Image (cartoon, rainbow, N blue to C red):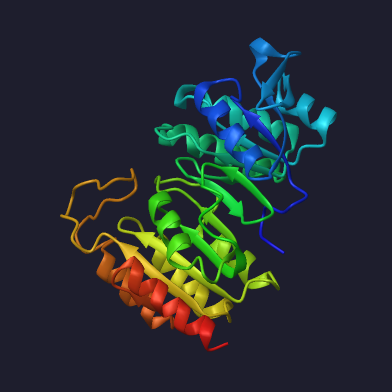
Length: 294
């Protein structure tokens, strides 16, 4: 099994005819994902040849869902149009919207996330994220499909690059699902959402959680783990050497005073029984020890 994305998932690509959308549509198809079409209001009614696969282009997500049975959309549109694209997906009631775009204004993200919560039908992953992959089953986003095979570790990460590294470090064991949630101040799916899903997934035996400086998401996740997660969790927090008051990489990665530091997050996680690695490689070693002991 997997969380949020399975071999039955049928994927639309909003912005499929753009350069990024087309590049990653090709990659998703090559990985075995069921990409069934895309959207572009200006090219609706046309068909695009993607490495020999004919994919229809629809005016909007509702039209695409009706024609193809799509239940996932991956959004590759410029930041200025992302809010409208997500609202289009939410209005259509698609169950999962993966927002890859980075640089989305925070007030736009807050608005479309609040709208999705109000409607109650669409889970949003992102924005500014690499997406989600259930190895050997499906791939929605930009995560390379050839890093790791299917296995029994779940991975949730704020960082795209560290997602790829952890998948590579533990490729001998494999992953049920790896999900990059993004590092913006406002995101649709949180560490806690993924932790809950992995806890409930019978095919996930243990969980790797990657966080970073800024905000209190990791502290809240630690409290959730302590009360609700019985599976082993190993953590890593990026940013131990980050200077105070300077944004590091992600828009949400900024330390203010003693709030949001890597050390504070590590302390909270360890207090909840989570083993925390000092480096990604050490984190992978801690997880390997747990899996080998099962």
